[in-house]
Length: 380
View 1: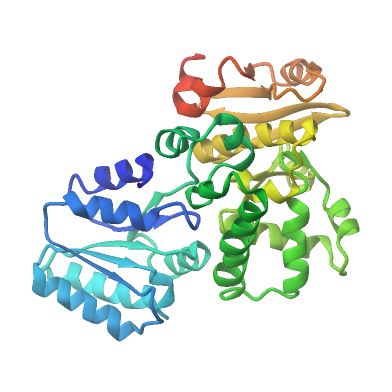
View 2 (view 1 turned 45 degrees about the horizontal axis):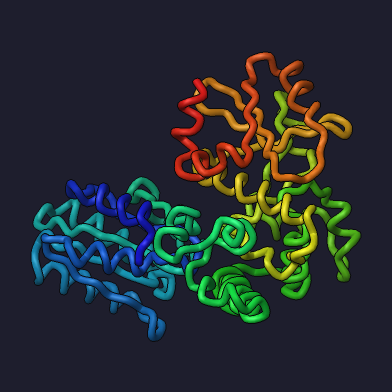
């Protein structure tokens, strides 16, 4: 049950023989390994799959995997899962890859994946610059969740994104415990704290918990600090947010402006990249939070498709999201049922004349979720 978008990306990359190391990067528990096994089941060329999941392996083990691939076929596809568990894996792979390129005796293709995206990104940038391409994995979309697990839209808005959690939708306490222990704590412990020095792990955890109380909301660093129990400073909180971003938990978006110094100094809006992360904060009788989750879902899709996403505010008037697609500028209001003033769009266009105003509501939300790229193309 692999994600359609991930499986199609892998197929596309290997429709011809790639000349760079292919790396699948994305959140935990979204089916990266499953997608690989599905792909290999119909891949007709020689391939070998290895995983370090059971224990930590050495660089000698990685070199042995490479030799097995060479012995299997000079053009074997070598797949290594949980690559981050091998110390100095990137230096070893760089040596093997460059040696192959220099000697020109083999054409081993390499596909890497792992659960600790933060550590993988760090090693790629340090040792394999210019030698790799990324294949992006994301949280499950509504269409994928609906087609495979028959998830209702109302449930997806509040709890969607991690397929392993869907079996617990009828049992909220169990669902919340799964998200907390199998997702959040695992990411914090194994993906972040294991590889990054964090001055105060307790404050780090508390910060994430606090951020999940403000989905799709602008919040100042000063306000965040005021609600944390331990002492910290804005630079520390900013560093925490960057780590949460690198681990595919949240996205911090800034205020849209044509003045760079104002963008950097603006308060961020926090977008959880999967609303299931907010489930513990959600109360069924809270329409304002339901509206925030609806807006966060749209924001996460925009981040997935366009990367750079902004918001805009002037006094009490706000634009939910601002995106630039090519030369076009879109100001987006999400009509989620939450009470808000729509004058922000008009004020935004007064300041940015070329802006096109977009409303996302119940009449077009499914078209947007199916393909944000196509949705915006049709507006032109």
